[in-house]
Image 1 (cartoon, rainbow, N blue to C red):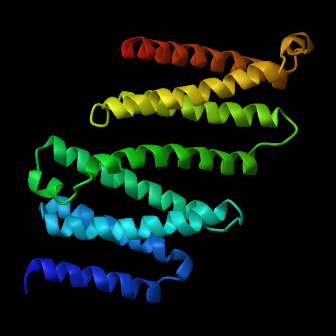
Image 2 (tube, helix red, strand yellow):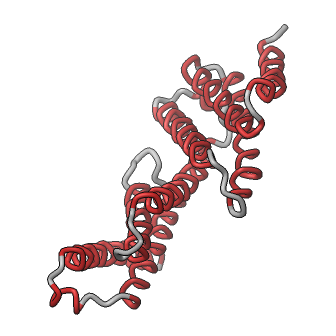
Length: 244
């Protein structure tokens, strides 16, 4: 029996057996985890058939997660949703990192099993951005008191993630290409819009006269984020100039 048929049987076995082992709510996450392990083994052994097996299994698990858990979370809060999303996101980051390193090292046999590696890289960037926004919201709700500039800090926390994502994706050489640069500018624009919304919604003039610690701290964060907005705006304007 050829290796290809062995891998197909392993894929079929994983799809059938995992739901019996894991609870249904964790089935998609378990499939994606099994796929991630297969992909990593495929890269390590430079075995394209093993890599293909892992990619198919990961796609099944990730698609199930986004079509069921991710969409369902918009309407129903699920207890372990954040843990599942964390696992899916970490797996995609790990797979992307291994793919980019293998491509840099010219491991053509391993990369050939990951046919849409560049597209997967774009997926990982966008998904990581969305995941960080989700995680910041979860942590914010559970740890920040609502009486002290709650909406102000919540919006600026999201803006900071936008700016960080925009800066990060264009300064990682293995990741950067023309489409990634465009994504970076889109992240910057999202952050700029949110800081401008804060600029027109909050006033800190009275805070400097009250001299209370909470007010002064909020005003300091406000000034800092406006500085980030100006730097991001310069990057966006320079990019528009290059397009012309």
